[in-house]
Image (cartoon, rainbow, N blue to C red; front, side):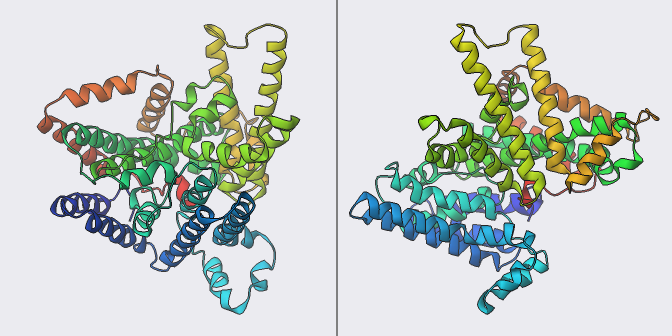
Length: 471
C-alpha cells in the first residue's frame, strides 16, 4: 500500500472516523492504531510483522531492564546487549547478502532468511523502524525518558503506520509523550495544515519527482553510454531534485496523515539546497536521520572531545553511507561527505584563529550555495549508480559533447525549472503560501486540496516507487 495510493488515504480517513467514535476510551484508540498499522504493514507481506515485533520487543525489554538496573555498569551492559540483538535483523538482511556464501552459514532454524534474501524479499522499513526502536533504550540510558513506557504505548509508537516505512525517524522522547495525553483528531486549523501538507507532498512526488525520474534520471543512469554529456549533466542535477522532492514529498504526506489523527512527526528538511557548505547541508537534509547519527553515534564516539573529532566525523559519515546500502558505492558516498565536512571544520577553525570570519555574503553566498549543490549532485552519482564502474561510465560520458539534443518532453523541462526555482527561492516563500492557504474558507481549502490530488492521479506518468523505500 503506497502512501500515494487511494487505499492509504481511505485507511487514514477510517482511522480518523474510528478515533472519533472511540473518543471516551484511550486504550481502545491505541489498540485501533496498532491494528490499522499492522493491517497496513501486512499489505506488503504479513511475515514482515514478525521482524517488526522482534525488533520492538527486544528494544522495549532492553529499555525496561536498563531502567531497573542497579548501577551504571549494569545499565551499559543491557544497552550493548540490546543494541546488538536489536540490530541483528537489519544486519542480516542488509549486509549478509554481500558476503559471498555467508547465507549458507546460517543455522537451519534461520534458513528462512536465506530463502527471503534469495527471493529479494526485503522487509520494507526495517532501517527506519530499527532506529526508532533503538532510541527507546538509548534515551532511557541517557535519562531523557524518566519512566518506562507501557507496552501498549510502546507498541503504538513502534508500529504507527504513517512513519513505519520511510520515516521520518521519530524518537521515543518525541512520540511517547503524545500518547500520554488524550488522542484527538485534528481540529479546523490542524486539519487545514494537514491537508496542505498532503497536497504538497503529492505534488512533490507525483508531479515533480516521478517526472524527473522517468524523463531524465532513469534513461541516463540505465544507459549512460547512449547519451551525450549535456544530457548526463542535466540528469545528474535532476537526480538531486528527484531525491529531495521524493523523500520530502513522502514526509509531507505522512506528516499530514499523522496530524489528521492527532500526532506530530518531526520536520525532516529545512531548504537543504540553500546550504552554503556541506556541513550546513547535513543540518538541513533528512534531519531525523542525520541527527540520529549525530546524537547516538558521533557523540557516543566522543564528538569533538579528546582530539578525535576528525576520526569521529569520518566514522559517522561512513556509517551514514552504509545505512543506505551495503555496497562500496555507499561507503564512498559517506567517505566523500565526511572528508568534506572535516575539511570545512579545519578551514573554519584556521580562519577563526586568524581572527577572520568564514561566512560568505552577497555574491560569495550565491557562489557557495551553487558550489555546494554541485558537489552534492556529483557525489550522488555514487548514490544512484548500481556500481562504481557505472559511476565512472557516467563521469566519462560527460566529456562526450557530440549531441546537444535532450530526449525529453517540454513538460519535463518545465518541471525541472519548477524544481530548481522552488528549491532556491528564499526561505519564507513556503510558510507564506501555507499561511495564505490557512486563511481560505474550509470549503475552498478542501476543493483546492482535492484538485491537487485529482491532478496528481490523472497525470500520464509511470508510477515510481519511493527512493528511500529500498533503504
